[in-house]
Amino acid sequence: MAKAKVLKIEDQEFVYHKSNPNRIVKIISLPDITGFKGVAVGITVCQSACKGMPPHVHPNSDEMMVVTHGVGKFVVDGEEYILREGEAIIVPAGTPHGYESLDPATPFEFMWVYNDPKDAKWPEEYWVIARPHSLKKK
Image (cartoon, rainbow, N blue to C red; front, side, top):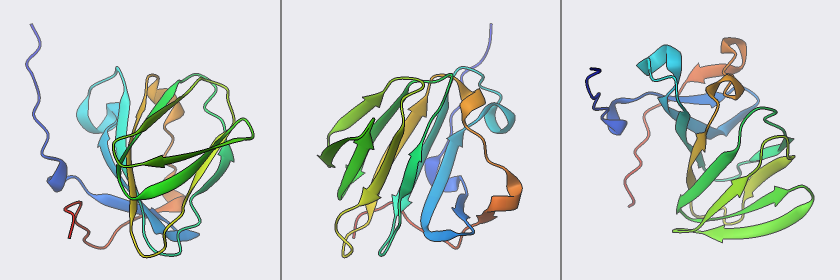
């Protein structure tokens, strides 16, 4: 029988996208990091002046995003949704979606889960290990 694996989220590294350094991501679980093949899980933090993510598609995976801090706008298949801390949105596989922060004074944070980790691609040429960052609210 397989053993449980405990991950300390604060110990996971943040990465940021070279073209959008105010959008940082903490990858919690990808198959090549944790060996867990069932899902991909991470946390995205949009700091001040964050451009968010333009519409994109995960062809094989539904995605759930749970807002843990701040307020943001999700655009799903052209329809806008404003979500705040404690709210979640589920996007069906193959549906165009994107997001942006709405309050430049407050970081917008959300946890995301893909049910098919093949859709969580992190090409190294675009990502850099981030400067230290804390998920703790100030």
